[in-house]
Image (cartoon, rainbow, N blue to C red; front, side, top):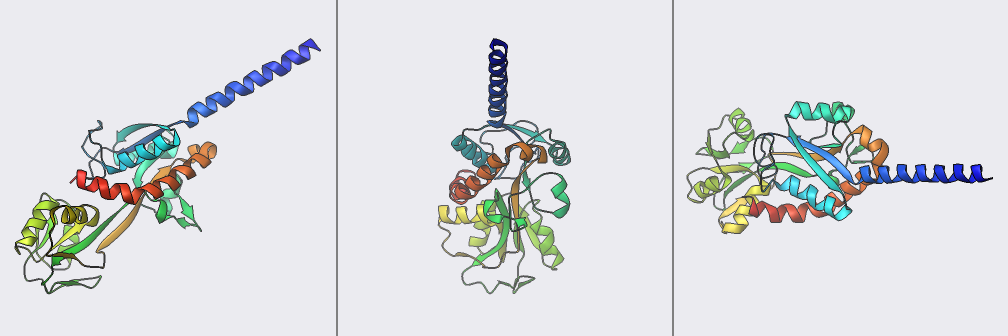
Length: 260
């Protein structure tokens, strides 16, 4: 009888220890992201995390704090980060756009068999901005009535897209510089990321600048959890994605002004 009771106690203790270990692991997640900056979403280059770190890092930290989770970040070259996600060396990776072949890397927030854009970490969308009296138009394929060059930020992919339309492009290093050029009518229009551009227009009251309604390019980006993490902590991942979707837009709008 005593031996049986002792055996039961040992089993309970072992189960309790396992539960504690599981709980401890569940409260800490390791997240990787690229070591190349993508302002304002991820700031700085190289392995170190700068301060401030970027909108995506701030968003993740906010959600993690609310859920009682500790996040440990590491920066890796893009390809290496994807390999680490696939083999479970990290629990999650941001930011990945959805592609069928990437499902072998990890899991996205899904709804009805498709990626759930409402629970994305963010989106990179380019819009065309012009002066309110300008005849410039964008029909979803081509820019019309541009008699001067189109402005773009230096090194942004949208510049190449505009050149493919047969139009001249002037690249400068910042959104603010492009908006100032547009306000002075030194460029026909500006192709910019709306997250940064909208915030600057509001902050500096560029009253004559208007945003054309059709996006030139738009893509959702996600926090993707590893298959190994999902096998043990799917509920946590679902809560994380859901809360991320709830706070994303409000926080992003506020932070965009700070990161300009």
